[in-house]
Length: 101
Image 1 (spheres, rainbow, N blue to C red):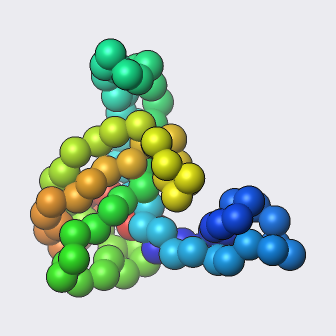
Image 2: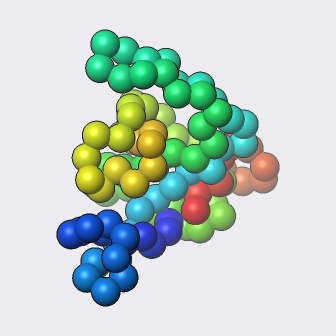
């Protein structure tokens, strides 16, 4: 979990609210294929997560494996260029899985 500036201008500390977002730091960089609507993107090392309701929050530095749909950022609250609509979270022990920030 990390905090960033939200609306109205997403970066002005004088006027913007702080919003909480979940970010997955990947063990290895990935490439995301393009589509009719989006260009391909390479070298992605962090993914913004949208967790489903009822999923326990991911602790900072917690290693997890997530399942969901990757897509390019499309809304103002998509702070990172790649986001994932998460459908399942596995909380890992040890060194397997990405690290949540």
